[in-house]
Image (cartoon, rainbow, N blue to C red; front, side, top):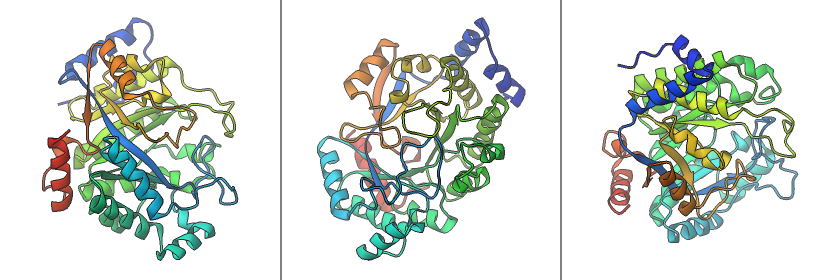
Length: 365
């Protein structure tokens, strides 16, 4: 049983010189095979409107912006899904701003489409995806109530929500002081409820947004506690803040390469006995991505041949060929996975329809 304590994690996060290499070497004992996974997906933003106003965000737009996606139509979405299907994508990643229907422009559009709320719309979109394509829906739209998660479970193979950080202190910083949905209590409740409902889940932390190393350690430990209790956490994303022109935090310092190495290593060692993957987005670390495989990282996340990363629009995904070359060059083998990990493809986690579709895609991967 993994016995890493908070002090152990803090020691890793503060490591210097050859101690960093020693900890990196220690991650090898938890690597079960030589495989590095990715999910071939299409990223579809249903709306770019969001109640939160995170100062580092590249996704949110104001509804008065003529270029903003207020709400995509079902036809627009289905057209994108059909293109993705032709390119061999298996995951439909639906993203939208949290409680977007609090905005009058979104609510008006929803009513024009015949819906009362975003949850009604996304449930119908996911059902359409299952009925009319071979893709598996994966929804990431912020916090949801228990009842809404229960509805989404019936039409999603998996779901996700970044914890980002478990410290309420960040709510007082420019990072989150205009983002009520980033309250860690709300995020922890959503992630926990997903566990109670047996929803295969992705979460993770965002580093470089004003947190200290103790808060990084506590955030990882909080996710581990929830994962140990419910077993629904498929993967932990270690995401680095990347400043881009135009955001309010464009002059904010980004985490160093060593900050990322220490954090990925700490996560690998903390979750080493949990059969939870450690994911580092390759498009945010294009020149350094390979080193994270040497820290225990074993997943690249969703990579799309047909759509951009709308959360990080200035950071294009590498092509699958390039990703394979990077992986092989580091001594590993790239393999495609589904948005739901294989261990969850059974009737304990999925209803009959999702189980049949997931099993069929797994067979023909």
